[in-house]
Image (cartoon, rainbow, N blue to C red):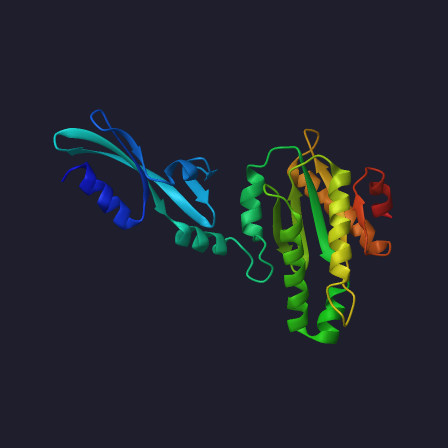
Length: 242
């Protein structure tokens, strides 16, 4: 087998590849460089809707050492792994995935804990299937309004936790308010709203403290009219303890 036979075999597999040798120089298939420039995570690369794993090996053809690099399409495996990490109903990450995520999270970030207002009444008045539709719609809104690099998980029941990779808490508050306005207009039969607590994670606190602060701010909103968002402030501690 010669180098042209090797190219033919790699083409039959549908792989994008690079061949390098002293005699033949370097040859790349058309999309190899484009995929190489779209590094996703660790040794996974993304091009359009497909995910690729970069592999390499050395082989001898016609007494010549050939270095082969090629991209194997692993999209099916990525989809399986991703689905296992996501909540089936909302499309957001699971709490277990959240726990792994925050274990490696470094500041700064802004944490938002939100809870659908009067969700039990929706289930009681309209049925659990409608309640599921409400949760699904909120999940879709969140996915559509967070940025690449942000993180959102179903925290439990109708609670959702979002981590924005920014220390601009006022920006986050405005983004949350936009989501809430859209959420209110999602169903014709009834109005849906949520309450949210917001807290800044920086060098002065831990991520666990920050999540507790977001929870405290959410609790305050729930006690004072709901359908609102509030940035945590230490002055809230006295109000919450009342």
